[in-house]
Image 1: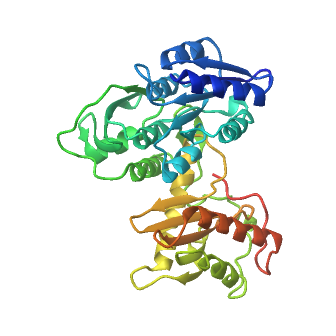
Image 2: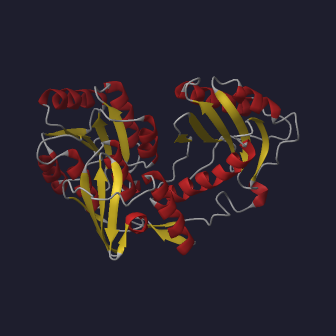
Image 3: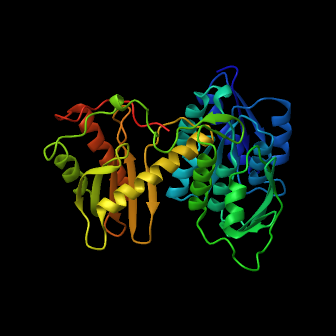
Length: 394
């Protein structure tokens, strides 16, 4: 631990000091530094390597967003914990999946902070690829920012305009609106600059940011199926039809009809608010069984369609250089939650797709119950369902 370094940045002296002292007590031997604003933090980062940066986002003058943008532009291999009072569950999942960015709620729970730092210090510095453009724009969305982000790269120069956290406009070259946003989000080796508020007269970006990120990754993957350049490095990306290992023999045999699949589906349908569930084999492109649904909600069609959501997310993670396992993907609608949870079944492509009524169900409880279902499959495998414990990986 002696070679590791943690930097706490916050303009509130009481929080900064108490957080730093608690980290010194928890991670003995690690060097814990303090900075009262982004400018002081950046001066430290330019003098010495830092493993973990903990920063508030809202500080006067040189704030946390500007600090993260500068780190991204300098391609510093630093993992960042942002402290914010504006974190929603979907945003937390999206940012946590990007690896280099983790969110911690205000008021802060020091035990939660310690666990996040512990996970980050376990990652060798050489394996950290830094904060990506995708991660930074999601941070702007989470913080409800009204600002313009200037993005420069060898691919071109463009501007993304955010209003209250929503991507409202974009332009690069002769492109504007959605086409410009897709082009900019595909830029590589980016330099980021937050240039302040810039109001858009007309909202020319019509698609949600999450869709634009996935679509830009899909298009880049189609253009370069063998290797897609990430923001810092070139990473190997499998084609869309070989998301999981190429050897067909590595896939477990599909569950036998009836007995193997039904208990899984029944257990999932017992979750409060469950409207429908499917067990899907994305590698083979179909459902192995479904329960629930209605004439207005075709579970088979929705489940197979969400195979592409999972594939796109894996490609995006690969593109930004992450190799961690996907625990689940959440799609939040006005009245429903849609959960995609890959099963930890070795190299398989099986996942559970669960739809929950938001008024009747609880997202946290649903997640815990899906984990229990998964654990029961590992502990007591059924005939035709050879389960292992490694998991689907990005």
